[in-house]
Amino acid sequence: MQTDIPLKRLTALRAADLLPLIGAPDATLVAVETLELPASARRLDSALHLRSPRGQEYLHVIEWQGYHDPAVLWRLAGYITWLGQREPSVPVVGTLIYLVPAADIGEEVSPGLGDAPTLGWRLPIVRLWELEAEAALAQGRLGMAVLSPLMRGASEKLVRRAIDAVLAQSPLPQQTELLSALGVFAEPLIAPETFEQIVGKEKLMASDLVSYLMREKLAEVEQEHAAELAQALQGAAEDVIVVRFPNTPAALLDNLRVVTDLTQLKTLHTAALTAPDQAAVEGLLAALVPSD
Image 1 (cartoon, helix red, strand yellow):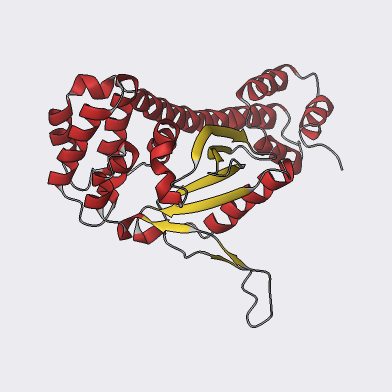
Image 2: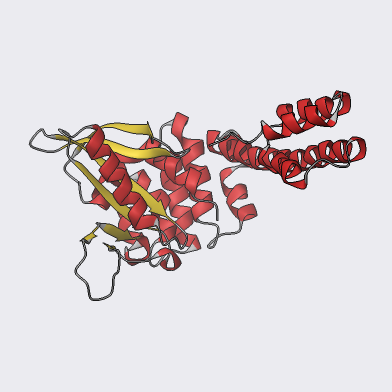
């Protein structure tokens, strides 16, 4: 069950519905922010900009976790710390939401140095399977209805009622995405073909969420093929060099392995074919690894 994108989209679309889940039922949602993290390819997609009943604005980070990851507590702590450094005048809190029992590694962040006293703290957590699905559906909040299949007591009958709620209550621009997310979470309870039959294939295929999932899958395939092509070009350039200049040091040939950019590898292959002598090739290979 691929949940990352549906959860991010659910948070973006229905963040106000999720406020009771993170212990802020009386807060006002100001915005859902996407933030770029430094020195990282990760994006922080679920930072809620909230306003307390007393008028104080703050950030609340939601980290959804659907698989076992020993680093998740440190990751959430890192997000909170970075946001606090970025805007020290703005309070920052966070909640870790476990989707399934297998993902649960607790709530305490600690280096774990035996009996030695260490810095440690607890993070607020929610275990969805401990919440009642019927109660979530009864709240009348579509965000909670979409999550209800992950909760205790969920059934195919409940999923059908959640579908009815989304169809009856959601704005049309959100409807297809909410239904697609509901279908992902309900997969263990209702066959995908049955879900599609109830909702309608055309409605599901019109979802931006489906487009996101398809683009992500295509990106994964392209990345896999790019890695294969890079390996092939590395091998081709090495073959040319070995055939033309068999005395080229093996250590320099190893430098080819650091190059993954396809354009650079094609240029290297052409240069190896046209190099006037071994010294020229060795210079090209030596330049691939910056000197200290």
